[in-house]
Length: 134
Image 1: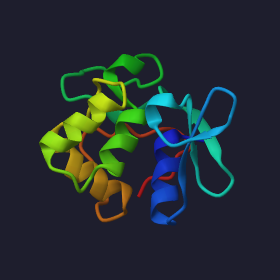
Image 2: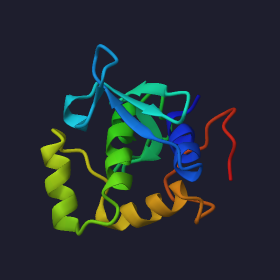
Image 3: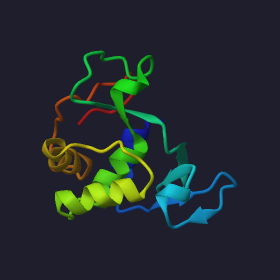
Image 4: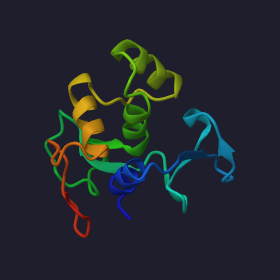
């Protein structure tokens, strides 16, 4: 399953987003997590899994061959979880989560809208084979 589509489905169905340690134990902080589990069945992905959401400076469109050109699941989850925070507070929380990868100010709102189903398309979202497109 595509991690971005799984996240989108979990958010729209109001399903839980959980953080798990390397031993699959639940944890509160994403910084301590190795995995992100989505939905009632807990489909889990390593938090560093690449998504199909391309970084603004990237030019390559193959998210599997060039994961460094795409946001990780962790970065997308943080953009969603902290969607209501000011930019400064969002960036502080991202740093507190132990990462420097963040979704930019101009991309955060459209990404959240897409995840919530309020937007049908998203610039720099690379289609994937076998993934339902809205």
